[in-house]
Image 1 (cartoon, chains in turn yellow, orange):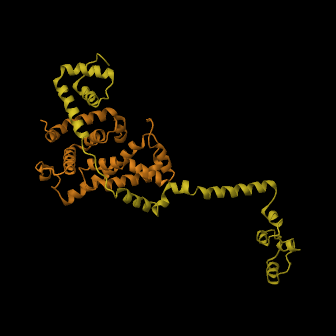
Image 2 (cartoon, chains in turn orange, blue):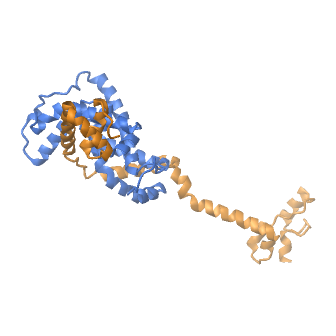
Length: 167
Length: 191
């Protein structure tokens, strides 16, 4: 870089950097050589420094006290109906639900592998609520027999249905 | 493009997982800079805070798309530039329809020339005068100068926000400052 002559156009970019104090050593030497012979660029450097300093002295803006509260209200509103479309709802807030579903799937899978069905598990208990899990109605049971069973409360189905549990 | 340590990284990660508390802290950290940017880019518009609110709202909604390729500050500035751009486009079109000749810069504005009575007024007048001077620049020069000299972003950050090469950023800042000198010098008693 050093030794290369700069045009004024090339020097402009280096002048910006120099005015900000971010010009590195090699480029600085090249620019210095140009500035020694170019009054316009020396003037431009002064302008860049002055304007940058003036702009940096721009008084800081004040933020109203209500800014945070107003924004919070808007964010709360955004988390309502519109929030349904928020990707976070689906990826994070529903994580417990997804975990629960996964646990059920795993549980079912493990029981199947061990050869124990939900029916068998239910029959091992004395809890009458387990009757509702009974599904092993004989495939050859007619609809009429099923209706009669319901009406009479008797065991007309055969095949070891749910009512066998109490026998 | 990779960046160094992002002071906001942990908060951003928590906010991206849905933590409003973390996002509120990010707002507290950056609200002043974003309001300042909005005000400078819109010539001291009274809508600056509303624009800043839109920026944070859009940031909250879009946090999932922030991949950490830049710092959060840089990304937030990019969001702000886009929001301001669409806002000024909307307002500009309305002005053209409703107030065709109302937007000229008036050098004899009595507000600018009135003596300041308090420090706060003096601050406001100086800030307004600077913002008016900035408003005379073409948008691409104005953006670059404001991001550098008002917001204090470095050249790489500005290039990222504006999506232009660093050389273009340097060139725009140079030309912008050169144009501003005759407008700002009288404010500072210069020639």
